[in-house]
Amino acid sequence: MKNVKVILAGIAILLLGHCSPSYGQENDKAPLKYYAAIMTGYNRGFGIQANITAYNFPKDFPLELRLGIGLSFLDPGNAADARRIFINNATNGVPEKNGRSLDLRFDFLFPKTVFGNTNSFLILGPRFSTFRGHFDYVDGNEVFDITSAQWGVGAGIENHFKLTHKLSLLLNYGLDVYLPSTLTGHDTSYSPNNDNVNAEENNQNNDNPFTYKDANKAIRQPFLMPHLMIGVNFNL
Image (tube, rainbow, N blue to C red; front, side, top):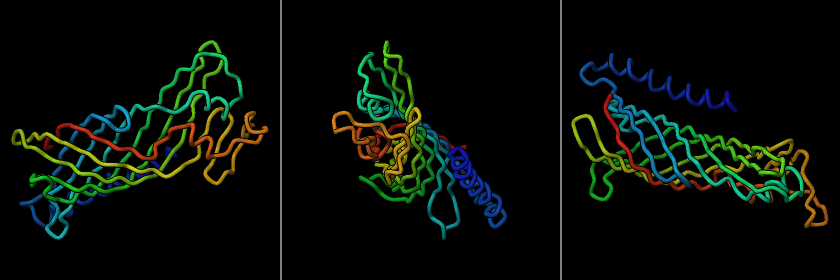
């Protein structure tokens, strides 16, 4: 999955970089421009995002293009169920847990007046996320991570409020939706098609093996990711 992220980022960077010189040769008075932004706020937990946007394309391409990266800290799920589904039915130890999602995003920004603000955009684009949930059972001799990698799509609205010639305040809100993906932890994995590896037995259900539905219910990998973030952008 690391290669997938590199490829996705590389395509976006090449696209932005390629547009700049080609458009500049056609019209030196209106070269491609960029602005960068950093935002923080709620993204199913505390989140922070950074991005770079290309704009000032020819009139027959009125959109803006954006490449971004985000990090969110979120609840990884039910610690007791995670242990039963991925390791064993032991119940000793005091559970501690934390989770994070690292995402890459490529957005198309459509200029649109929103709530009377003429400097606003409708946003739509693909997403790629890597999730990691960490579970530690203090005095229970168990520590493990559960991971997944997912594709998704996001939509939202962004309002810009100009502060200075080069600086603007941003308000970004919307929703990202991710597809179900294989959950892997310890030496066990559960896939959406139930092609599972080393599935544990459920001692509360006649020792029948756990399924992907059980794992996905216990582990809160990204699915619906509503966000409300505030930040600043500055012209480069």
